Structures are given as C-alpha cells and as structure tokens.
Image 1 (cartoon, rainbow, N blue to C red):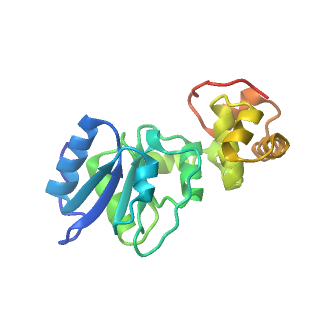
Image 2: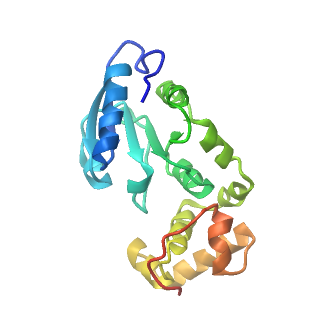
Length: 214
C-alpha cells in the first residue's frame, strides 16, 4: 500500500479512531495513516465501543461492513469528521451515510491518492468522496433513494436484507403498521410496486437474505 505524496495531517498529529475488525486491514491502515499521514490511530471492533468512547478525535474512519442499521452522526468540536470506506459501495449505502451525517466516502477500488484527497477535504471541513463513490452517488438509482427520509432508508435497507415488516418494527422499536406505511412510502418514492424491485431501485448489486417477507 503506497503512501500519499504529503502528510494528510499537514504537519501535526491527527487523532484518528477506526472501526475495523480485520487484522490484516488494520495493519495496512496503521502503516499508511501513522507512518505516511502523521495520524495517531486507535482501533475499535464495534460501533458501540466507538460511540461510547469520549476521547477527543479529529476523524472517525469506519468500515462499511460494520456499520449498524441505525446510524446518525452530528458534527461537533470533538467529532468533526466521519468517513466510511468499503469496496464497491452502492448508491443506497452512500445516500444513507450522507443522510446520517457522514462527510467522507472512500471506495477501495480507488487509489491511495484519491483517499488522501478525500481525507484532506474532510479535514478542511468539506464533504468529499473518491471518484468511484462519486460516480455511484450520481447514479440514476440514487435519485429516488435521495428522496427517502432517514427512517425510510433504514426500513428499506432492512427489507432488502430480507427482514419482514414485523422484524423491522421490533428492531426499530415501532409498530408493524408504521413500518408497512413507511414501506408504501418507499415504494411510491422509488417508483416501484413490489418487493422484488426494491433491491434494484435502492442500488444494491446483491443482498443478504435472512428473513421472510411481511
């Protein structure tokens, strides 16, 4: 993994908290961020432990495969940079992250120089993404997704994964009737009429089925 041409932290140590559970990828991230970018890195295995830690940080870098189904970040003095990374991020995930307050999107298909530019933009208080993520963000399917509310996006993501309306209601702490109404709103905004069209309309290439339909 090649390092950037200049430090991301612009001459100072940047405190970076990373949500990642793959040891080999932790090693690569640490090599790049600490040795090449002047960052002080702390790793976390779960979103819960990351969120519960109150230490000041400049950047939170999170693996997309570990993101919880319910996510919302606010920009404040201690946590001003929330960045999600992953491979082949779909339009649904990108729009959902944007609605949740994530300011940086890194696609592993892009190069380290693209990552550096994105992180520098985030460090300067901008909203940024790497080229592949930007392309998916502007994809036609994303236009319908962008119309969904944050809760509708949460419901739609769980439905795509195979959860029934009853299971979604239990997970989100609401009623099954409310979830069904939100599902109708999702279908209307995406311009679809049946569950089999949802994954494609949301921009998913594939989905992990784990529940029934309801």
